[in-house]
Length: 445
Image (cartoon, rainbow, N blue to C red):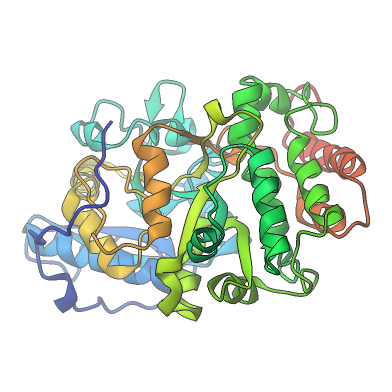
């Protein structure tokens, strides 16, 4: 399914988004969430839309509901909220299992979506005409067997390398397509007195990017890795492609390619270092473009993005993270089900994408046909979108396998700090994921 990026913004067809009046919203407890036909337009069917309570999520959901409500008289959408994190996950699962979920709800795609037991708890959308507008790359992230259960909300993003384009221009460097080219660039950057690879272990989750962001290369070298990994047949410590991320993490430390304060620096520190040209590369998720705009907005044009390079330039591509989905539980029936599908139809329009762009800077492409990124999106967003436009992307491991051990970030901090070897780190992580696989009751573990 095609999608267009990098063009000028279109005139909003439903409303001027800047004049939206937020809905009156209070955070709701698990016991207070539910549907109501009160307070809507006379004769309209009222449905509730459950989202997490992150401020950006709430403002976006409110704007979408306001626009949709104003576009037609028959359905009214009211936004309700749930906690984030584990508490919110448990609430969603409980409400689905007890048949008390809101009429429509937003939640993760990929492996977390699979944990909702979709075939039992959700309404399949297979065959609905609005799915024709959804990019083909999104469907597997919200599918079980031949049935599709969700539509995207938000934009895709990538795991790779934020880089300082001004440093690249100054040193005459080209974006690398292989790891060898990346290391060669880093040696030139180091010789110029600039930190080649920024690491920020003060926020331990950032240590994972050289492994998680490398999965496109793993899948290219071993297409069956995710399936074999889930079945307990493939291991990071013994698969020659999968261990590369651990080896690369060790290599940048052993070659002295990191910033001096890597052990204590945090994300905002890393962004400032990159924006100032004191560091050239920062392995990170492109979703952090918002952080760049927050801490160094005047330097946003200097920052670009490229996929983590592997061994083969011919298969160079992006490890992609996909937007979450919007779903309809099986407890939504009758007029409310019809109303819910009408709302999902709206979410798969260019107008809905425009409204989301007004609320927050896109981090990559919308996976809805006809949606256009505003012409003034950051270069990072344009770079990520280019991988989708060319088809040079594949899902992160978390979208094709339910297994991810909780200790990965701590293990990679040790590897990246010279405390533990890459081989030992990979073997320790294999032990970590074994515990999780057994808890999930997966065969082969």
